[in-house]
Image (cartoon, rainbow, N blue to C red; front, side):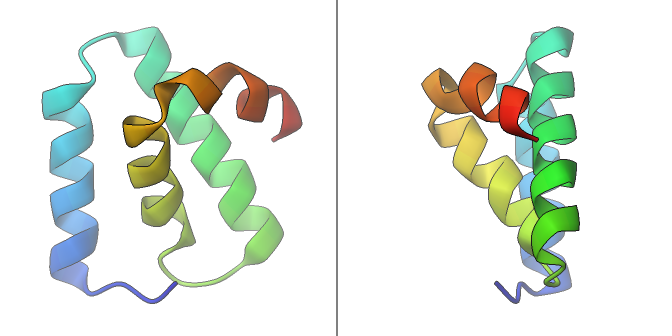
Length: 66
């Protein structure tokens, strides 16, 4: 999914503001990176970070996949 630089920056800032637990943040970033590597589209990393912040119950399951 194509995102603007402004959208990408907003997602990164939101991650550090909303997810205080460093372990959870680490899982979100690692999972999003793995997903982005599989898909290879610009904006996939930030899109997955945003998705996982909104759906934290999916983090562990998806972390195992990626």
